[in-house]
Amino acid sequence: MLIEYKLFQISAKIRNITRMEFKMKLNPPKVITFWIAVVIGVLGFLGLIIPSLPVVGAYAGWFLFVGFALLVLGLLVKGL
Image (cartoon, rainbow, N blue to C red; front, side):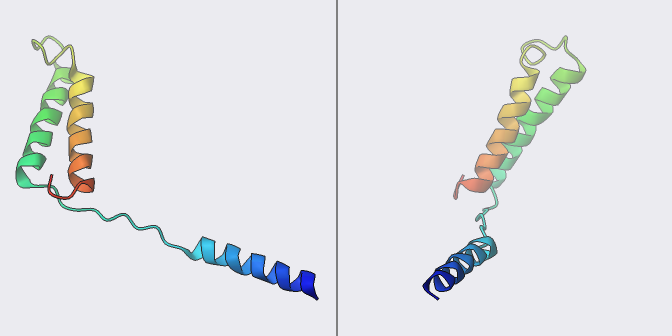
């Protein structure tokens, strides 16, 4: 009887854990943050298409990464 009760408690805890919802609170980025991220991303994209562009062509992948990372940070950090 005691074992059955313990098993029931364990199964109830497992059910509660699986039903938990993990919600991220996303905030819209400020307009200036959005446009800076877009400009950096577009520069990176142009650097990938036209590798002969000075400065941008050599670091095109980094420009894309920084633009996307800035956009994600703008969503996650309130007021950015």
